[in-house]
Image 1 (cartoon, rainbow, N blue to C red):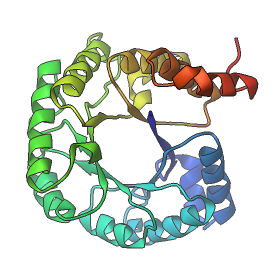
Image 2 (image 1 turned 90 degrees about the vertical axis):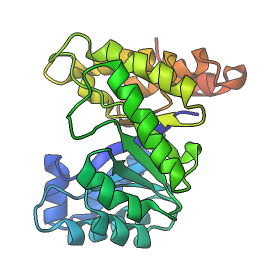
Image 3 (image 1 turned 60 degrees about the vertical axis):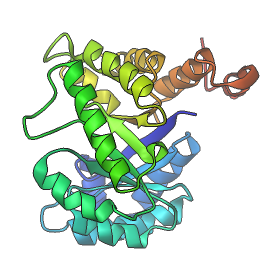
Image 4 (image 1 turned 180 degrees about the vertical axis):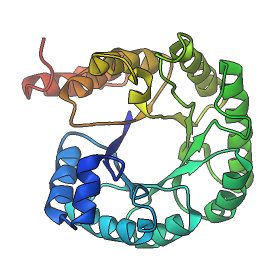
Length: 266
């Protein structure tokens, strides 16, 4: 089934940053409960926006979030020391966001990941910058998956992020990641693909309808996870419809259940 990484507990978002600054536990709890009720698989927790406060903010957030949900968490930080602290505080096997082929991040993250029981988001980024072609994405995916397998990680625990880039920047950015995902899911059987879905619509109007249609096109190419907002009812309806049409919903039961609940409307 599709893995939904709920993106809303992130201090780059103004309301979340304010809630963290004020230690407003109720705001965080209510948001997490809503994400849980709406179908999130993981809750992403990112406390990096307040420079100099990430450690204390992450520790506080983890306590509040885990009071509000039994879902596993996605620990989101570029700092292995923060991740090490966070890993020790979680109750369920977490996802870690992220590692890349950039030398500084790669060299610091690999020792952290070795021997850990976790899922990992692997970014198709290296020191040359963002990928420019689908071949760039595919080659980087194969390299980083190989490196992770060498330290004992199973493919089922690896979520490759092809790095979705805005259509407003280059007209090929949509087809580039779709083509890459199709190859990755074929040539690296057993891995998953994920990414920040809303990146595709950055700088354009009517972003939600772009995100919704892009999600279905990505799913048709094998995309099986997204970092997204589970409170967006329209995109969740599109997701459940897409799962049914892709053959991942036996007897269309989940689709029918969502229709009866009023979650999918014509």
